[in-house]
Image 1 (cartoon, rainbow, N blue to C red):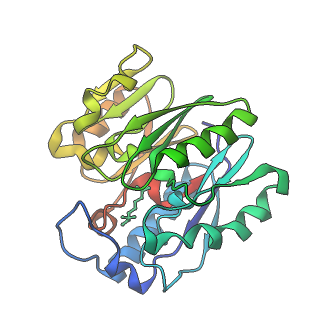
Image 2: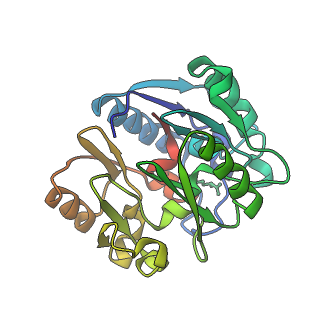
Length: 259
Ligand code: CIR
């Protein structure tokens, strides 16, 4: 994709208490999380983005994961309604920033009883795959796909069974190329011949969440087989240390909104 902008939010001291439903690696170390976040911001800049850095929100331990607060499409932004009760307000706290970049009629808002988190949304050109997960419900899909339809986009629902979000199970790096891990190696939705699939080995599953930005793919450091495949596909790679965010189930895409 040709992206020009990103929004990130600094980690709060409370990041040590972020939700860790799927990972058992201890609590993040705040100082290290800050360093890794700095590296992440540098990576986005190196890939060519202008980065808006929002201040930390101490009352929201998971607020560093801004991807879950909104979905940005080429035609406008959709404000989410996070399924995690402790994260719900994060979406409203992102809205003023969205209004700085988008006109009022370019912003849609997901409302009660819908839930939807951006981590469950994968954009493939004009088609959107939407996870049905612990965080994103049927009504979330219904409202979201309705907004997309107004903009001429299509969507389909994909069940997420054993992981947090759709994109925890793999990410699209454009050009038809899709990384998949775990349960997503066999999901029918991804096996209609529309992708060149790379099956990420289980021991590198965390590395399956990457983000394509212009000529680059930004990925977590320490996943040599994922890296080798991305290089084989012809991408320039920027690696970022992600250990502190991994401890609370956060990965590369989660840390930014991009368009
Ligand atoms: C949570 O459980 O909500 C956070 N600890 C991690 C959110 C990760 N976000 C993402 O995958 N988009």
